[in-house]
Structure formats: structure tokens, C-alpha cells
Amino acid sequence: MLMDTFNDKWRALQQHLVEVESSHLRDLFASDPKRAENLSVSACGLNLDYSKNRITLKTRALLMALADSAQLAAKRDAMFAGAPINNTENRSVLHTALRQQDDKPILVDGVDIVPQIKAVRIKVEAVVNQVRDKQWLGYSGKCITDVLNLGIGGSFLGPKIVTTSLKPYVQGGPKQHFVANIDGNHLHDVLSDLNPETTLVLIASKSFNTQETLTNAESTRQWFYDNNVAFEQLSRHFIAISSNVTKAVAFGISGENVFPMWDWVGGRYSLWSAIGMPIAMAIGNQGFTELLKGAADLDQHFKEAPLEQNLPVLMGMLGVWNHNFFGCQTHALLPYSHYLRGFPAYVQQMDMESNGKSCQLNNEIVSSTTGPVIWGAEGTNGQHAFHQLLHQGTSVVPVDFIQPLVAEHKMNGHQDMLVANCFAQSKTLMQGKTHQQAYDELVGSGMEEALAKVIAKHKEMPGNRPSNTLTFNRLTPYQLGTLIALYEHKVFVQGVIWNLNSFDQWGVELGKILGDDILSRIGQPNNTELSDSSTELLLAQYRYANQP
Ligand code: F6P
Image 1: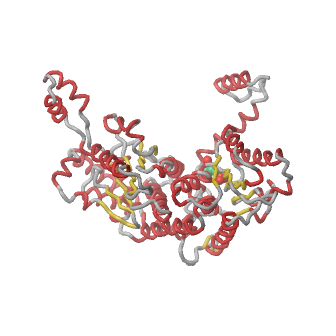
Image 2: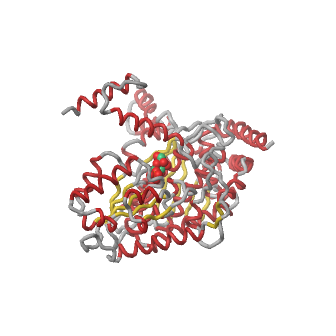
Image 3: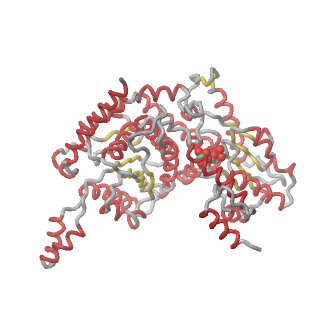
């Protein structure tokens, strides 16, 4: 019955698509001077202008009806309440609890998790203060000048992009370094600039089982040994954040330096937990608290705002419209902000690891397409690289333009130009240029008519290409918290529509197993059992290149 209603709403959108396809965005804007007013919304300091999507008020109503029929509100409430919505791992999904602003109990298996969260936060704050106040001393009595963060995926991207994004707020703390890759070049290069006496290592791994992180941690421990630091002295230099406390202790980290996290926090949603310690070390505990507050306010908005004014619901449903109905296979995030340059990569993991799936919650293979490819880069650099394809290519790429309105610097003219470029790009995508306009321009500039007709074909731009523009005043810790939570919930909304479990990631497992198998075969040239000729060929090349 519920499924029938959902299918009816889906079909209604398919029928409506035919009406929308016949109109061009530039005509929709020309015929309705209030279009932007009607199709924009603000909350928690974020302004979303979604008027440059191929929609009408009817489309919005139909999309909201689809969301409603998918029981979005009930599913959202179940997540916030701690229901085990990660069904393949039988886990609750409670990254939102990590930023809850009051002590309202949240039960997981009958236990209130709020006191645990608070206890860990107090412990994190104490360590952060010790390090920032130069009270945490290394084995030789010197204070910590550098923090080496080892972790990958969600245990890396969140802390890394937040500290990068909040650079103007980074002061007073030690310098942060991040190494995720197993490629030893990175760790080698970073270690060569560090002094073991003044370096603190944070190992961030929810599972404490990840090859890259553990190998980098072992090599870093060896670097201390190579610098004549004894095992007993390492307790001043290693901290772990993990839900696998036993393994972290077995690695040699003293129990008091292991900060727990929990199964109910997904790796890619974990920056709000002790995994965010590097952020607090960089911007201070107060800044980290503001980041949490921003996310909490967006949570509240997601829970309470009517669907038609709900930022994550609107962005999620517009994404469904562009992806499932217009067939757009990718989605670009273009922050016009140098500090947000890492944001597309962060959302890429959050979105693609969450919704890049085919098997639904009811164990059936999904019949529509799911998770678009998320990509992007900072403006204006992208304009001189890939925007050509955005404007005239055969693939239509919906874009989120992200624009802080107030600059963090005082350099003359830069911010005006940055903002003008951002707004011009969305306008260009929207209106395009007709053949007639291109032709008239060419003839007007003196070109002979026959040639102008030909060249105009190359200069014509289809326009009618969808984009959102997200603006906010300043990229503060609070505002960044709202922005990240907005995308988290957008991903959740789309997972609901596609009926996916957005919180597991089984697709990454097989590669890890085969990686271990191939690793063990590198030193066994005669072992061709169960292998394939391509892998054997590649292994042979590798062995040959590395022969003594
Ligand atoms: O690549 C898969 C993944 O499990 C991510 O989901 C996770 O963020 C990352 O690996 C790191 O995992 P861990 O924190 O357990 O080391």
C-alpha cells in the first residue's frame, strides 16, 4: 500500500517532467519576476537559492509529496531517536547525538549515551587545553609543536577539511599534519620535517584495523625508536581515538590515551566525536563547541521545518529530480572559497560511500539509479579547467555553488571579483546563449554572414542547466557546522527515497581482502593459484622493477 502510494507519486513526477521539459529556465525567469523569491529559503544563516533548477511550484509540491510518501519524517525521527536503522550491522546512527545541546536522554540498547558523550568530550577538552597551553610535554620535557594525525577516510577527511576551512580561526595550537595514504612518500616527507621530541601522534581509526593507518602508525613508532626514544617514553607521544580500545592498547598506547568512539557513529559522520580532536587542537575548544552548535541548529531545522522550507529536504529532493528524472549522472560542488577547497572531497566520501549502493533495505535490487558521482573544485580555478564541459558538454551536471559573502581578508577587489564570477557562472548555466544571439554578435562585430552562421554554432550555449546557490555571511565554525550537517541530511533524504541503508559500506571490503591476498603474493613468484593473468602480469612487472 505504502509502496503503491510512493510509485503513484513517482509516476506523477514522470508525467510532470514532460511539462517541465518544454520550458527553458530563461523563459521561466522572464515570466515570473518573483521566481527567486518563491524558490529560495534561509535557515541557520544559510541561504539556498534553488530557483535555477528546472522546476515550477508544482514540481516542488510533487517532490515533497514523494518525500512524504517515502515516510521521510518518520524515518528521520527514527534516526534521531536511535532506532537501529543501519540494518546490515544492526546499529543505531547517532552522529547527531554527538552535537545535541541538551541532556535529553538518547537510548541505545536501553542505555543513555548522553553521559558517555559528555564524559569523552570533557576528556578531549582537557587534553586539548593541556596541549594548547603547552602543559603536555614530550619525553624530553619540551612542549608539543606539531600534531601528526594518522587516519583515513572518515577518520581523516572531516578533521582535515574542517581545520583547512577554518584557517582564520587556527591560532595558538600546535601545527597539524595529516597523513592518510599508505604511499610512504607522504609519511616520509612529513616525518622529515618533524622533531620527535615535540611531536604528538593522533591515531584515528574507528576499527583500529585499517591497513593504511596501522602501517603509518607502526612506521611512525619506528621513527621514534630510530631517534632513540624508548617504548616507555612513547606514552607522551601517542593518542588513539577508536571504538576498538583493546586493539589500541595492544598497539602500545596507554589506556588513558585511548579515546573511545562508538559503533553508532559512522566513520564518515565522525568528526563530531573525539575524531574531531585535531580540530579542537587547531581552533580551540570554544571553536569546536561552536561547530557542534551549528550542526545542532541544522539538526533542529531538519527535524522541525516544513518539508517545503527544509534545506536538506529541498536539496535532497532536487538532487533526486535532476538525477532520476533528468538523468544527470554526476553532481558538482563548486565552493567559491579557497578555504572550502577540500569540501567537495569531503562530501564525495560522505555521499558516495553512503548512497553508492544497489541493494535496498528490503533486500531487493533498486530499479532506479542511486548516488550520483560527486565531484568539484574551488572556484574560480575550475572555470579555467572544466567549466567548458559544464556549459557546452553533452552531459548535464547540476551544480551547487557555495559562496561565503564576507571575505576573511582585506585585499582590495578580490572578493567582489570572486562573487561576481560565482554569480555569473550560475547565470550563464541558466540562460545560455541562443544561436541567434551568437550570430547577431558576430555580424555586429563585422563578420561576414555565411561565416557568422557557422561560427555561431560553436558559440551557442544551451543554458537551462540546473544549479543551487548556497550563500552565508562568513565561514565561521558555527556556519561550517551548519553546512556539513546540511549535506549529511541531504544524503540521508536521498537514501530514504532510494530505500537504501546509507550507513554501511560493504562495497569497500572485497578490495581490502584482495589487497591483502596480493600483498602476500608479492614475494611468491611461483604461486599462480587462483590468480588471473592480468594480476600475474602486473605482479611480474612489479617484482622485476624491484629486483635486487
Ligand atoms: O574505506 C572504508 C572505511 O571503512 C571508511 O568508512 C572509514 O571512514 C575508513 O575506512 C577508515 O576506517 P577506520 O576509522 O576504521 O580506520
